[in-house]
Length: 105
Image 1 (cartoon, one colour):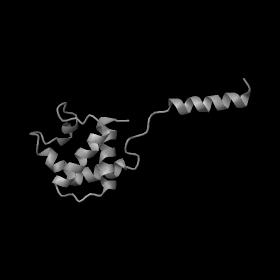
Image 2 (cartoon, rainbow, N blue to C red; image 1 turned 90 degrees about the horizontal axis):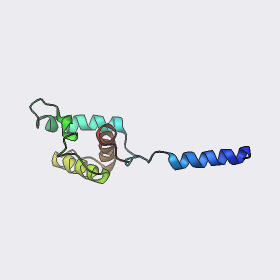
Image 3 (cartoon, rainbow, N blue to C red; image 1 turned 60 degrees about the vertical axis):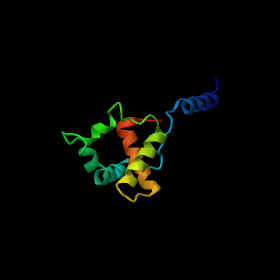
Image 4 (cartoon, one colour; image 1 turned 180 degrees about the vertical axis):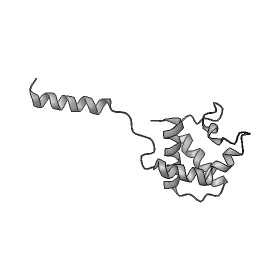
């Protein structure tokens, strides 16, 4: 195989085997963590005797089953606590939760 053909083939192979994109590409996980700490953590911590609200995301009965459901849940919770978040902020928190707990593609 000629060198140029080999390079083209290698590029095509790499593109076809790359990991799927994160479902929240515009979300900033660092910002999402801050927003979660500010607006979500106290409520979630109050749900558990040990005050570790992060276990909410790993509980089998509460775990989101898809990226779209995760985003809907973040939006509903933000609305419930009156966070006043814009879509970008919902994406930030959804991205952080996905990166840390869910790993949806």
